[in-house]
Image 1 (cartoon, helix red, strand yellow):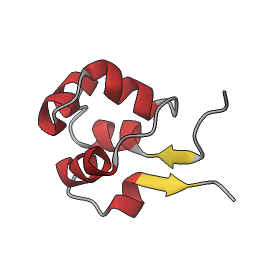
Image 2 (cartoon, helix red, strand yellow):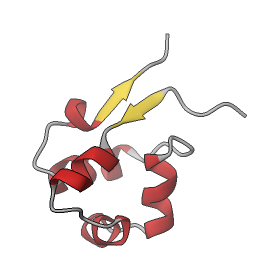
Image 3 (tube, helix red, strand yellow):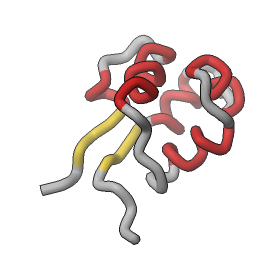
Image 4 (cartoon, one colour):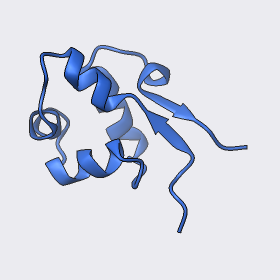
Length: 71
């Protein structure tokens, strides 16, 4: 199965946020570290709610965190 056509800037944003860990971000948004890792690697698309929570954790608009690369 192909990866979902959604790119993200989570790794960069975590680094810019004082090298926040995947576990720290997961705790903030209510998901596991493994879920953050899978989203970050483009292997899993978050729910809309989780995507908004991740964007809010970085105080960024959704479009600065996630980009649609589909048709």
